[in-house]
Image (cartoon, rainbow, N blue to C red; front, top):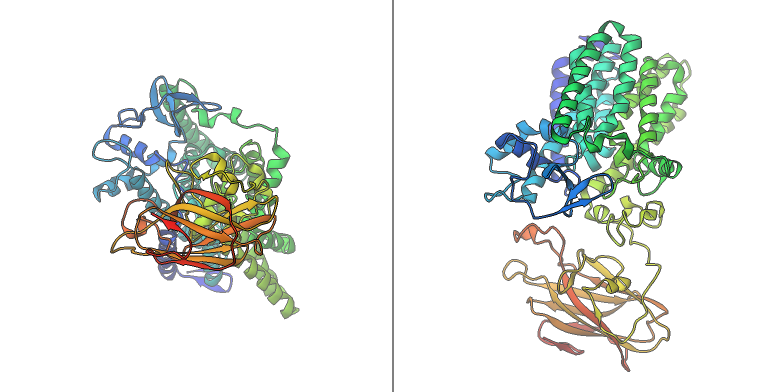
Length: 618
């Protein structure tokens, strides 16, 4: 048994706790409903291609027909940005590391008839998403166990459990890495092992094995090139403090790199694939991106993982009691360099994602710093002659509150659909990156706070507003899906319209719509309508027939800027009812609306599917 702090290191009990942590976090990850399959789409198709067809090229599959389209620095395949065309062949554009490492998992999934392809060799996005969800949950639950063992090298059991849970539930591990096979998912898992080896070597519990370390570092790069910063820093660290193994580390790393260059040269005719080229880095927006990556309400690391403020406090407050200072220096150097690198991307907000996604690969370093900071705090308290009970309690209370906030924020990202829809509703974040700075509706509060009113609200005219046209967007506030050929669905239990009036007078609003109803499964769809906070109508639909409903908009309730809210308590997703893959909570589908003048008295209206107090026509 090895002594750690005031407790004993008991391998048997620690194994049991690690298993419990794995099972508990795996359960949490699997039931969290938000899944983020964007960049990683087709990555499991590549795995299956390598398994069954022994090829990195995907053109033997029945992919949708597309022509090469120049997409900034590569030719994407039609509208599919995840695929690139090189020498008339189709390849997965993003790093191949995750696809290669996932092969054993994919083999097992295929054995259970879960596949990224259909029987006719077409792509199966649902199968892809299922495979990714399971693999990412397994890897990140494994990372929780790694964090626990990492903490036990320096902390008592109770603190180790807190660190392990905080490391995966209070960070991007829950909100990003466990939601799909982002490149950082495998990268963070591999880095967790590397950090475990480094702390183990510092505490004389693990002997560094240069070939294993070089292999882990090399695959981190193959998984995601941003990890090159970590690899360089760790290599320098080994050179200064473990020079006896440096040559073997360097040779093994060079062999892996040579193999990767050979792969790239054979397939693409370049030393490195396009995704790995440093030409993708630019400095035009560095300072804006740096601030955005740290403090913006849309992507700020300190906003989405506020417990980092407490970790920084521990390191500063107990700096004299820090035991493994060179690991602190290494961690801080990697963190600073990594954030500087991701701030060189013009697309610094990371597209459709949640919070500080580009910083996900730093989580193992954050956990290491938390462990070393807590170790220093416990050491200071053990040697302190003064009690200062109130100060100690306040210190722990502050840390607990910040950890709770971190877990809540990242939990919302993993469980609330609205936080994911924030990327496209009401405006696409890639087309309007200024939304990253809007505190009126931060992404993590998207399920709790309505989006701000649009800046340009359409004036209500007598013309019919076709909800399938782009012009109709000027009347939409929140809760609407993109337009379909003949209508537009609501996609939540609430949705709203907005409009302006040049002159306030009695109006009526007519809308053609149909409800999401499934006989015997979902037989009723209720609708309550509210104008500027006042109820003006209640309806109940029990069929899928198109209806025209008319609502009185009395001048006594109207203003210059107005909003009409639709409350749909029965909105449900077809997926939840076993009717397909559509996960949107559907309520009503609106084809058009029309304003018209009418002398109206204020009277809330109701519709039971057969009669309507105001006019309703099938």
